[in-house]
Each structure stands twice: as C-alpha cells, then as structure tokens.
Image (cartoon, rainbow, N blue to C red; front, top):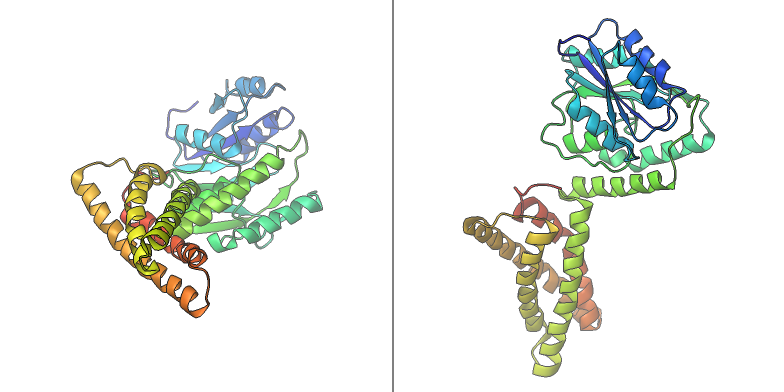
Length: 365
C-alpha cells in the first residue's frame, strides 16, 4: 500500500454483500489504474463472510475496513467513511454492483481538473437509464425525485453514486438518518458547480435489497427536514419544538384573554395585547433553551436576542391584531376562535424570523 495521499477515496457501505464485494472492489481498483485510490468499506454487521473477504483483499490493496457491528444506516456509514478518508476526492457507491465501477474516472476527472465541486451519476440525464429494475422501484424513484424537485435542480438528487471535493463537508452537520446522503449534501452544502454524468443503473445481481418501510419513513422525515432547512434556515426538530412551545403558549394566551374579558370586562383587543406580551416573554426563554438549543448566556447576547425578540413580537402582534379584528368585526367570528386563527397566521413568519435573525449564530442541529 502506498503512503502517498490518495487521489480518490471510495466509500462502500456493506451489509451481507459477500456475493458482490470482491467484484466491486476489484472493479474499483481496475477502473482507476490512472489514480491513487483507497477503498473504505463500512460494514454494518455482516454475517455472510463479507468482512472476511474484505480483510483478505486488504492484505494486498489499499483497503480500510470499518466494522460497526450493527445496522446503522447508509448515510451514517458514508459519513463515517468520509471522516476517515484521506483522498483529494471523496466518493460513494453501492456495493451491490448496481453502480458500474468503470464510471468512476468520468466522475472524478472534472473534480481533479478543477471544473466541478461535485459530480453525480445520473440515471435520468442524457444516456442514463436503468436495467432490470422493477417497475414499482422506478415509480418510487421518480415520485421521490418529483417530491424534492423544489429543493435542487439536479435530475437525480437521490443517486447513491456521487463524488465531491474533500472539503465540501467541512463544518457541515449532515443527517445520519436514512439513505439519501447525496440529496442532503446538495441542499445543505449547496455546492456551486455540480456536474451530472449519465450512467446505467443495474439492479443488484446478488444478495437482497435493504429497502423497507423503515427506509421510506426515514426518507420522508429527511425530506421534511430539508424543506424546513430551506424555508426557515432551521431543522424539523426545532420546528416541532417551536410549535410545541407555541401550542402551550396558545392555551395560556386564550386563558389570559378569557379571564381579562369575562372577569375584568377589559376590551378583547387590550386583553389580547396584554396576553401576547406575557406569553411572548415566556416563549422566548423556552425557545432559547429548548427549541433552538442556544446555550449562549452572556448578558450582551441574551439582551440583544431579547430586544430582537420583542421587535419580532411587535410585528407578530400587529399581524395578530389585524387578523383578529378583521375576523371579529367583519366576519362575526367568536373572539376566541378568531384569536386562534390569528395566531396561526403569524406563527410561520415568527418561526422564520426567530430562526434566521433572533437566534442566528447558534450551533446548528
């Protein structure tokens, strides 16, 4: 094995791929004779001899084995592989022969030549296509591609065959959930120069597919997370927590408004204003320590955030009162129902401003 810095690091996630792994690894080294290559196999608890085959091949080739002992997911495997890679270009491909190793030079050359930041093997561009793929899998793939089209202009953003500069992921916190890391990289790192290379995808020749209901559910959660990231600059988890804090605040808001109107005979608009500020202060601290996990406690930081939050709250209050008054005075809607709808109108804008402005600079995810 050479001590030189590899040109390419190819990461292969495996789980019970004994029927394919020898041919895949040989194909990678055989197709990349003009490059210095290292192969990183990340195994998730194979019991069919895959690990033993890799260990045997590693005696004469630049192969690194990361044995994780249990199934932890493809995206997670790829990220672990990238973290240990030394190559100038990092790449991912399946270990089931669905991705032809002979495509690697065409994917790597634009990056090494400085013409691309990331390259993607595309089934849906130019001469690309699929062979021996069940119609149901093709339909799922096309539907998934359509679902994420607003997130990226790539024709095949869910491709498992992709390469990138080794600094693309630095400083980025990517999701370890699921199996479509390429999409996550495209949306979160937003590489400027993405080149798609057509190739023909062939369904696995041996072993069994790892896709199941769990992987589809993970994909849907990831897509929602990416839409939240793109629209609000935050995560799905933060949105859920923010909504939970807001939901509790809504109940508190309604109780305060009801008490002020029914027991103290205060005008409903004044009651809504007083209630808004009480709930806003309460929500600020819960959102800071829980929704956005902002641990910065320096008085200067907290004071600046609180000032921004108050300003944001004033804008939200204006929206709230405008909608509330319109619903009550123009449409005759019961004031508590109108208040609930008014809060719903303001919450999306409120979350966006909090994520991108009030709590900006926090550690993400």
